[in-house]
Length: 226
Image (tube, rainbow, N blue to C red; front, top):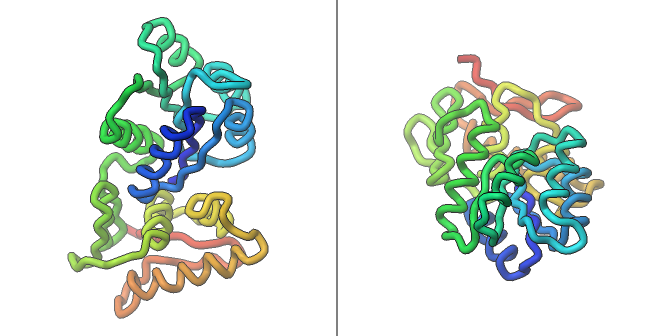
């Protein structure tokens, strides 16, 4: 899952980014409102963490602008202000939740998980397809009850495919969600294919039912006929 952090306090923004990445999210940072708006309008994110007090463009105006552009990405406001008026203004502008600074990182992660669950058809922390199960809290992966060890990128791809179960996901979408901007468009297709091949060895090899399907010329999907 891909998350944008718009926060001008650099040390806090990078700390949040590191924590999110340790939880296997793909996180990107913008340190001012204009940069955050540009990213929000041109890139696809699953969640935006947005400070209210930002240089160049404040968070409320940024939020209003992305909502005017019909971008429905969930937004969690991060604010040092504790006045009820500011919280109401943020919610009226289209925020989904708010968190007042200073906050504990475990609380932030809980809010992130909650908002991400809202946008998914999946209402549980366990994603499944056939006898494959992925616990998004503990990051445990099992098939037929047996644990499977995945790399960070393999896990991120598998989770993304499961969130889009029975829907075709393009190679570009996989690359954007898992690697963010850190990939070369010209080599991306082969790069994704190599990771899918390795993931298949761990998920599907020696099993009669193959879950990871290739849709030629489009991308991949996890198919769960049940």
